[in-house]
Image 1 (cartoon, rainbow, N blue to C red):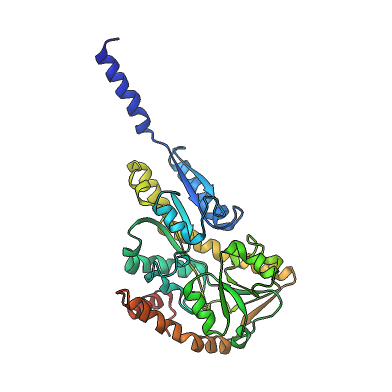
Image 2: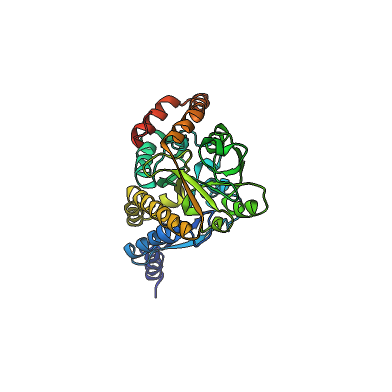
Length: 339
């Protein structure tokens, strides 16, 4: 074989893998692998991409912070390429993503399905700039946080007095403090042990967390508003991809990522969180635990008590150059929670 033919053959050998490029996404999050988020949304998403790409897209999961660090560091892990995709709460990195926090203000979120769709619109209208360093795949809410306690039932506003409860975000902490409780920040993985040891009395958290984190084993009482009524607190959650990873994909694989994320993924997260919440409430009641529903009068009292949280938040984000009142109005208009 002459050198010219050899060079042509070499070029073909190099070109062939590029034409059928394969990619594996390293996906990290903070919950155990059995959590509904991985089992019911992220894994099916990976299976869908694998099918659409004829096996060229694969996923490797790193649940429960297996890549090291804390949940607050997931946004940096994906930004720096330690992970290709993460599922996390922007609010875990306190103050870093101020605009999106509007959806964590008191009594903003009543359920996961409608609020997640509203949050996606809110992101597109108001918060794209603060996530410009990422390829944003989805936003959703946890549907609102119930109050899960070990020995004392929280019945209305006075029930929060002196209660040490785990909170997930700085806005949630301010809300709990306004209700008379004592907020304690810690990752979800530490909550069950903290309750068992009496470090905290319980936790604010989505129903989706109850069984994966074994809250079901250390709590006896649960409280929340009636169906369709917004919760005192909620957590914004997001799926982020490393921007360079996305930009480096062939056009056909980018198209698959785009097709299977955005509104499609937002809808799946919302539906899953609501479905799991309903199922978990049934299971927890069958287990003998008591679920208290706040009355309309109690919710009104809580709204009055937490009004200052919204006012203070608007001032704080204003110092960062954001129009807090406009963001609140936008969020409340999209969620239908105008006061």
